[in-house]
Image (cartoon, rainbow, N blue to C red; front, side, top):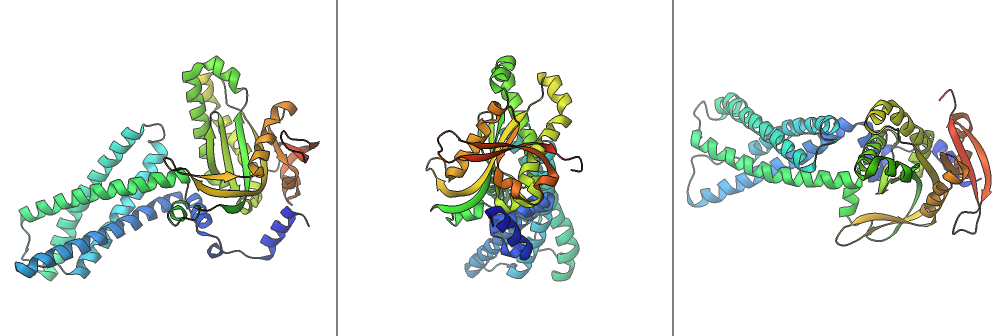
Length: 393
């Protein structure tokens, strides 16, 4: 039985639960299926930990001072931790929802500086409201009547300095989580933790699908639009491609000029043939936005693509700029397949193993180009041209 059929039989005969998948797969799947909840959980988890840490620091600080200078009030650790958890949950939910909505609707075409300043402003407003909630609701309405019998041990000056501590601490912690989120965005969901644990410090063998997508007639388009407009054309094209990535569980490997390289783990890429459907979803996205492209650039983008799958080596590379690189014949073959699109006047070419998936024939219309010798390779490859989705799909 060939490789693809064996993979399919394995997945049919074994019910693979989420717990059996590795961390990266689970994280990506969850992030793609529940983007809002994913954003909220990241913020809540971080701010709960940050607030518990602050509660511990405050308790230790007051306890240290109380050893030499008896204080009328030494906050107990348990109430401080509980308060920190409540505040962390509330603040995390607000930040998670706000960040997701603003990122989706507002920050897409804003500069990094503007994005940063707006996020800081939103954080400060949220912090002021949260501090008011803590003082006038949690403390005055709940803690003061029950714990202190209505007699507050803190005056206005004490609350002022407490507010300053909150602002400074939250500002520093906001920098930390912003950095974490930016790194996470660069590598994609589920990669940061393996990186920190050194998973890719040594080469690791993985089985992956790679797609090379290249803008058709890029040279003539660049000449027609000029460098400035052409750059905007590429930016908008990649932005639209990004809009359908999550739905099809693709990972962006790299951008190279007017080319984008995408990757899937084989089980995810072959699930409902998401890796092939992705190409046509991009075409549909460009079609839906045709009016925008025509008005702004006088044309609509069209990409040609090549697909191949197999074993690659994944390893962390670089010192001044670190990244995860994939090496192996699979990537080279995918690039060579894509380069033949112009020769055969085809938009999507792939190697034959994809056609052996049980749902390929009923999902796509295709034609065989026969065995082809790719540049730099001695072994011939069976090439298939995918013309489109069937009517039912």
